[in-house]
Image 1: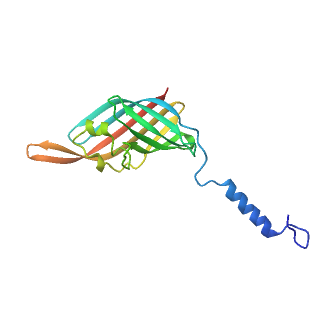
Image 2: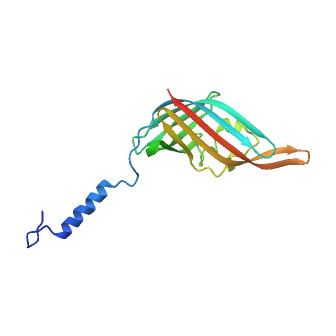
Image 3: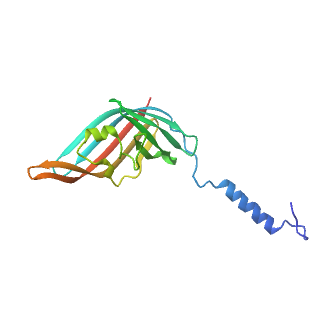
Length: 180
């Protein structure tokens, strides 16, 4: 260890050592979270609500998710019983908080939910490319149960005696999966 003429360690060396230790111990991406791996039997409930009607639909799907081995990030896919499938990816954070950044076809649009064939076929009068403001699907992972939800506004067309009207319609997305 470098010493000054008085025999004590130099202040510069100690400052350098402290700065190095701080850099090594601080990870700006955050702490590693537990992996989110496996197949999940899931139920999706979607609700469209406007001033004219409320429509609720339920679907069954399978999620297959893998941990990327880096800071809780996961990727994988979903498959509805009708065969529609796509990508699901996000991050499992500390405390079991889940951020899903992608849920849609493999060609994929961002934000999530803007390109899910099953949902577009279920609600053909709605323009999901204009769904907003959903940028991340928020959820939780508790034991073996994954729950993800979102609430946004989607424009939907409706035929009236005077022509076609576009209405801002509330869209709710609630997905719950149990790891098998």
